[in-house]
Picture 1: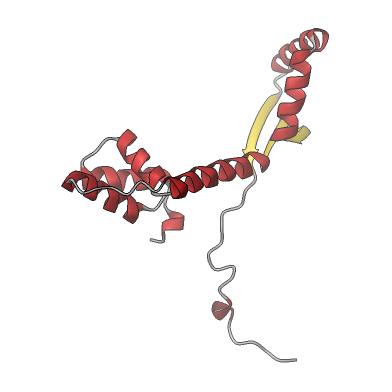
Picture 2: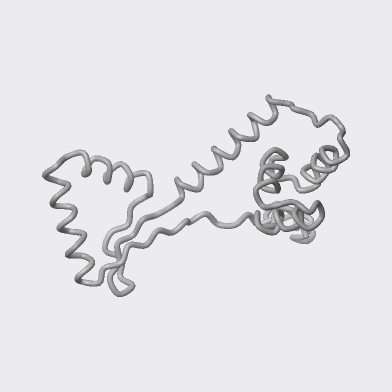
Length: 153
């Protein structure tokens, strides 16, 4: 199975089973290895053997920054929708929804109006849906050899 298809939980389970460690230690090792299971296993084996583990802070900082960027990309592709009986009444991006919520919460008059609206929406069976619209990466999208021979026109 290619590593791109693994979920984080599957990676953690592999580390836990092979190394006999808990979820927190497995998660830390996986984060330090930037999601690379083989590298995390290697680091854990070196730590168990008493060998010096490399502490490349520049690379680890880059890994943390990449995780933050990935989280922000996911957040930017998230939509908040107000629905009633599968009919979408209003749909906004999560950053815009967060900005609106913050603005409304800062104004006492708008805060009371928003709370009254939320109660009214709940009584009338409106639903608030939060959905991530990121499509999964298609590994064959750039595999031009699988498309077949080119035809010259």
